[in-house]
Image (cartoon, rainbow, N blue to C red; front, side):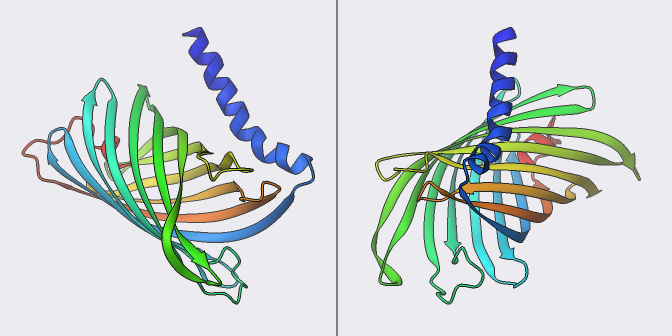
Length: 260
C-alpha cells in the first residue's frame, strides 16, 4: 500500500511538472483557445456488456475554425471487482493546427485501442484509473495533398480521475469532476516527442434524467509537437451530453462506471 501511494504521488508530480519543465527551458509555446462539443451514447445490452459511441467536434475560437472531428466506439466488458476492459476504434479528421492557416488540408487518422478501467469508491468520492494503449495510423501527405499509405506509432495513456457527489437536485445527482491524463508516444517514427501531451480537466456534471447527463468544464491541454522544442498550450471549454440506453431488464449495479 505504501509503495502504491509513493508511485501515485510521483505520477501526479510528473504530470503537473511537464508543462512547467518545458517552459522553464525556453521552448516555443503557442497558446490557443478552443471549444469542444461531445455527444456520448452508451447502449447497455447485457448485464456486463455495453457499447459506447462518442462523437466530438473540436473548434478554435477567434476565429471559429474546425480543429478536429472524431467519432469512436468501444465494446466494454465488466471484469468484476471494479475492473472493466474495452476494445475500441476511433476515426479522426485533423484540420490544420493553426486557425489562420491558408492550407485547408484535412488529414484522416485511424486509431484502434485497448482500454482498462479501475474505480474506487470512498463515501461520496469516486476515484477512477484509466489505462489505454493506442495504435495510431496517420494518412501520408505530400506537397499539400493526401498520399497513399499511413505512418504509424503507439501511444500509452494514463488518466487519474476524481468525481465527488455534491448534492441531489430534484433527486438527481450533481457532481464535480477533476482529472489529469498523460500521453506517451512510442515507435520507430518517434524521435523527439516521446512525451506527447498532458491534459488537466475540471467540470460539473448534472443528471437531467436518470439516463441523461450534461457536463460543462475546462480543459488545459499541453502538447509537444514532433520537432521536440515546440509546444501547444490550449485553453478549452468542454460541453458534453451523456446518454445511456439500458436494454437490460434490471439496472446495472453501477451504470456510471461504463458511461464515462
